[in-house]
Image 1 (cartoon, rainbow, N blue to C red):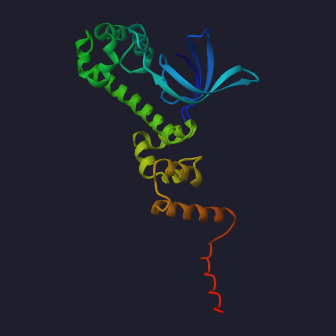
Image 2: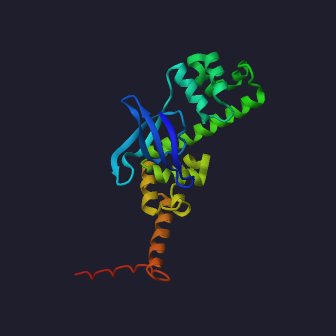
Image 3: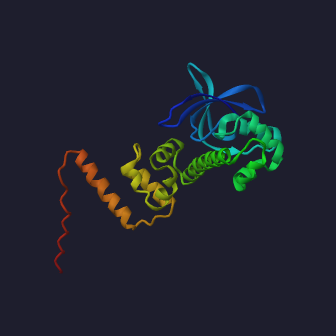
Length: 237
C-alpha cells in the first residue's frame, strides 16, 4: 500500500514514495514515474532493486497497476486517503459502512446512489464522481501506453501533452509524438506505431520518415538534400 509521497515532480511524474508490504513491518522506498498513484492505494509494482549511495536500498519502478482493496476496512482506508476529492475519513467510513464490499462498484457504475449516504448531497456527489473519473482516465492511459511498449517516463510526458486524448493520438496518429513530445523521436514513435498496427507503407509513416531524414540532414549542416539520381540503364550486350 502506498503510505507516503516523499517527492513528486509534477512535470515528469518522477516520484519517491514509501510503501507498506505484507512481508515486512518496515516501509520500503520506491522510485519512478508513478503518475496517478494515490495515497492508500494497493499497487502491483514491476521493476528492479537498486542501492542508492545516500538513501540505500530502493525499488526502481518500471510500471505499476492498481489492485483494488478487497475488504471493507481497506476500502475505507482507500477512500479516506485523499484519493477522491470530496471524500475524507468521515465520509469514507459512512460510504463503506453503507455499501460494504460493493462500495467501489457503486462509485464506478451507480455514483448517483451516493446520495443515499447521510450528508452526501447532489453537489458533493457530483464532485466525487468527477474526481473518480479523472483518476480512472489517468490510469487507463498509463495502462494502454505501457501495453504498447511505451516506458513509464515517456507515458507521463504523453499524458501531460494530450491528457484524455492520449490513447486516441497514440492509436491513430503516433507519429505526432515525435513532433509534440520532448524526448520522443522518429524511431520511438515508429516503434510505437508498429505496436498499434500502423502499416509500414502508411502515408503518415512515409511523411514522418521524410521529416526525420531532412531534420537529421539539417542538424548536420545541410540546407537541402538532392533527389537521388536514377542509375543509368546498362547497355544491352
